Image (tube, rainbow, N blue to C red; front, side):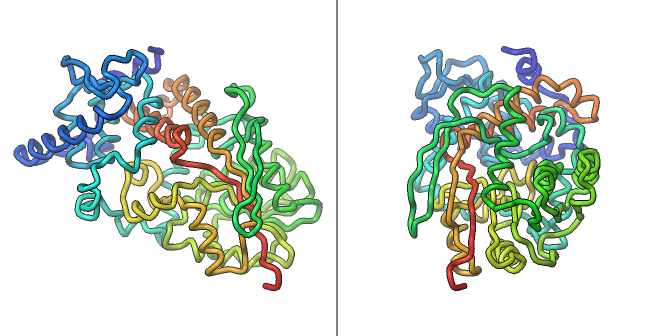
Length: 445
């Protein structure tokens, strides 16, 4: 066990004012019933999966109980774990990790097993009752023009310095594109589809160049060149805008994060492109003008499914004749997207309020029904994201002392580690994908 992992294997001190739901009490009888039901379901699931579950000092159970190589989940406080799971489902699963009720030396490996079976973890009879027991998103987190700023701020305004503890020199907070092996094919209507997988396990020293490769491919796909007028929806910390300006483009980049806006402007000025790039604190719905290229890297995930049509209609309305759109999007299987459309998740509660992942089909359908645009090209590179997340998590764990000096506590450490490994598991298992999509206008429209 690494030093960082050992630190995260002990129960943290929980500040109830910061983490009220980790210390909330429930009626004893209700807690006991919920815990008993959760225990029965969870252990039934575990017995058919290649995992090992250790309940306190009891014997190990699970579908791979005798396999020493199988991921091991240690329930340090079984009763507390099952009570949290029974009360909150998958939200409770994550909260119980934050509270120190369980740990796993190979957290990513354990979560990957669960992610690979995401659609079948809950028995089918209980899935039919989903609407009665899963949490629904608060209306205050719906991405209206009034709410979106606060949703974005809760994540991206945490601290520029905190993000810098695990991001590379480009400060790119999205999947990198490493050197990889590619396979090309075609989907419906002649759409070009390419799948890429990394050739080797990338190292930290390769990450910054892989992030630049990702950005340059986006700009190439959108046809960004000398004199191009570019709209970027979702600034990040300015790397794409800087590289677009270096090509001779002028860029309007919009964000709702004041922290990102400030640092992006500093980085753009330091690179000498302040005259070519404008970074505005502005909702994408309020953008005006005409642009030869529209680019957006992993921002659609924060739009909310209720607003996908509005998002793409706005892009359509500002795109100049002959222009192109390049979007990088995290996607999920269409059937799971439909099934979870109104589910409030641990990720929503603690990481991305108001967020929801589209499917490829949803993006295609929304543009067909609401815009003059169509998807002409796709690059699928989900395993690159798994490697990006691995490198981020390793860097984060090695920076825990620095994170603590920034005012974050032990529970935050566990939450962020869980988030990075939870996400990595989704990509490693194939449940999640990340894609670069090129959209163009239909002929004659």
